Length: 255
Image (cartoon, rainbow, N blue to C red; front, side, top):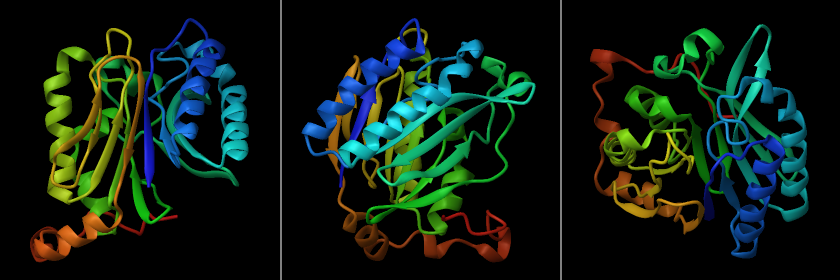
């Protein structure tokens, strides 16, 4: 499956950012991508008043998905009662496939005060893959990704707004989450300060398949047979000591 990471800088308005994103998405479509990933809060960043424009942004992206035949996973800021929500929405040609609300809210950006936390993990079938959804700070919680993996996930999507000053931890954690679970991981980031850690495509051995350090597009082809083959050749997940620490999720998460 061909996938596209859009390493994108947020503009002064959601509309301007959306137009820039659509330009990169058109290029991804021209290169045969079936799935594209946009960063966390891609159109607005943490400008909370801009959440009012998110429905229009999503409508345009849904039109693009329908017209192009691509699936677009995008991080957006949404109103949620008196607070806001940091969400990942997966828009397919036939309509919205999944909604994930960030489970782990980061104190460094005041999210526990301004955002509502998610209540459950979300995974879904994307082509021949099972994709576990997450956002940025979630990457620091390995139990989330292991929980996805033991339920069959072999691809992790991680839209982010990760600061450049913590880029070393970003790459270390992304590669570790992929390698320890023998899964692909796509981590896409903002291009503008104070963010700017590189967008990364990571293989199931923890190897970096591609990176972007300036605004642009990275198209990477993923082999759905590879994680399955690695898990058979070098068993890890099957050797978990469930008798000591049980299962991580109370119920199945795949949609």
